[in-house]
Image (cartoon, rainbow, N blue to C red; front, side):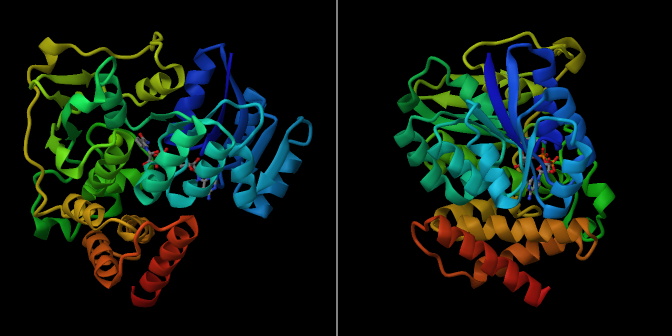
Length: 380
Ligand code: NAD
Ligand code: MG
């Protein structure tokens, strides 16, 4: 029996994680945290019986306490709630399926409490990889990637010597706007950006896929997870999303993981590693597929990727600026307050205005985050 907790249980990764728990009798849920969808969270509490649950606002916590009054569950709120779920005594693994750098402090809390991490929340590694990775090592905590590309890399490294990695080939679908020109992008609406060709995901990451910011965040995520140099990571567009990523080794061999696009595979692999379990779903049919094609990413039209690499090279607090500016810009875009290309303008503005702080600690990272939000509010 393995006991897990989930931050962000009502989202895309969170609900798919619970789908895996539903199909496997040897997984148990100790604690769940979600944002505002208390109706779904209540159903999840009834079905999976965690002893602790958390929502973001005090008001929602009150409503949920009333709705779940017949159940034996403690209900908390705010950052204290997220931290309590992260450190919940009964659980062995924390699935970080929360979106955004709000996941940072609870992830650190979980590592300090000795919990293994099944990491979907890439924003945490982007902003604080230099703190998270050494801390996990020091505490003997394992970090299992859930992001499909990073799971593919992790799977490709099975039984290999990591010092023999020549490079990581990070695949990208190119997103819903692949092939479009800059002028066309100016008029793209929220509905257009949310129409991803291959993956069904939360709104923020879907917009990030349209800007290629997601791939930029993933380059930074890969760099921390696999301890490689930025120059060793090459992004390759593979529009069918069949090859989930690859590793080239010192002798020139390339090992890849392939499959249909289904996040349940990387989630399940992270929870059962090194074991593989049966997973229902479509299988690849290569004859039907016909071909797998490759392209260079169009970083001229979609600077999300090149600016992420620029932020990573600048290092220190710059990845936090890149990430926080993007988070706030995407939120504004989803609320229809700005246009699609304004996402880039906001990120550029914030990066240009920032003076890098080297090796920032958690407090400084959160201060930089807030200063980015303040600057965006004053200018946009
Ligand atoms: P989502 O928007 O579908 O779900 C986010 C979850 O976080 C929801 O349960 C929401 O209630 C919760 N949440 C948000 N703010 C909160 C707060 N303040 N307090 C408590 N809970 C809060 O997002 P998602 O697509 O599942 O993505 C989650 C993370 O996984 C992101 O970091 C994303 O980049 C990463 N990821 C997702 C996918 C995917 O297929 N969806 C793939 C790879 C990586
Ligand atoms: Mg991914």
